[in-house]
Image (tube, rainbow, N blue to C red):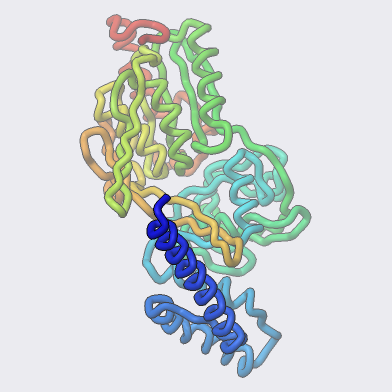
Length: 414
């Protein structure tokens, strides 16, 4: 190597090393000089300034409030919950780490609470849709059709669905009082929260080989339970199928997509459009049950139930029978905060049916509009006598006629 080139390389390395050492020394001196102070960028400083009123209010509450001592943790929790309420979205929530664990257990098909399934809020409370056998609510005397108006003295008329559900959840052995209206008469029930499990899917075979599958909620093991039900009915010679989604408040997107995939054949199921413009299209493959199909819905069929019903309707795979659905056409995503380890459930997207409709606020209008008699409308679906169930009979008449006409092969197609 030429001498001049070698000298140039050595000089460059000396300059580079000197610069690195100089930067290190400068940073060290700054840290020594600033002590506990933190150096922020202009953008970071602006964000910090925006949060100063929260910190100021926290200090004033702790210093001036008359009453029990208040912790920073409780104030921060309240601030986070209030922030989500301020955006005017009834489906966005903040959960502590413990609350989120209880919420996930409920989705998995277990619960630590009262053992009851309730519908979306309406008319100053929530309707009890189902009371699980041997659970606290059942033992206390709560009945399907009761309208819960207060929990531990707290009126729930203005609360969102998730906030109401949180009131039922608690440590095993803890007590809770539920106030209800039953046939316009006020009643109060005290119960002790306990652990229990729930089954999401039930099925049976009616006369003329008509299959019937009821889905309470699209959570936990619903898709596996549905697949087993479908396999059993097919093995027993099912010629037509009714899927009952009445009073089903929704659940997880993945669960309803898996179930709908078994019904449609090759088609779009749902399109999810996020706030950032990203679009995800969920599709079914060719393999599906090919018998005539009817979907039962009512005003308490919401969210995931509406995804399935709209997909069947838009693809003309089956007939929708009952009354107009609830109308929830948005999707929530859960994310954990690094600071509190709590979780936020935030509305991040809207879903669109195969024909491009969004059902939020409008619901799914049945192909065959049939209502139940007033004296049985408040009953849980599994307690309505088959002879009195006008919606079920309308569905049975349609699909049995199609089966007799030979519309759709028996079994699995594709």
